[in-house]
Image: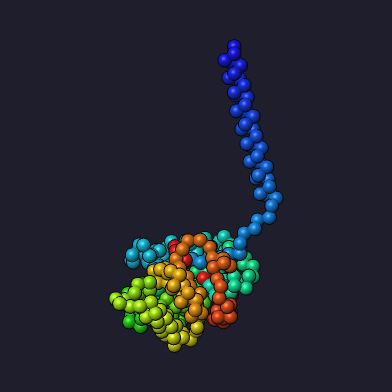
Length: 263
């Protein structure tokens, strides 16, 4: 009888314990529902490389899957903005609408022109292509031509800087001092920017780090030249990620009629 009584008390205590936990969870849930949701101002930047079935899988998406992703964005209330406009809003601390995102491509591969561009153009969606200028000039690795880049720029594309050489910018040459490294990287970035100005006629101060590689030294250098730098991290971009003068971005200059990391 004593054992049964102890068992009953144990069951009762366990029951009361779980009832208390349940009440606490319900109260917390109701409090969350009634409290305002303070979500930091942010947007998402999608990054693509190849849009093809015949290129390395690690940097490729098939045209069919790309189309499915665009349909998802189209049917679920997403707003596709120029990358320059998103950065401008973040710098000015202007509120971005929910589900705002930019579409970007690192490297101007031919499949961007042949597969991605027609699908974006028909939707009147802006996008950004980060270009390594030597690769375009030399027709290296199935790159688009300057004529194709100009055609896309006339229909919603922002053409931006991905360096001249697409080298690993963090690496120093043999016997190269830090100052010499800075000078070489500065020249690489600025040479690419001048080539884009010459080939496209625009001067958007956006820079995508080749291979997504950067450190504190490179970040300081890129910022000192007046650029916004972009890596390849997962997650949203917010106000704490951008610090430069918004006047450097010329928002809406090229994309006014239409309105940017991986997948």
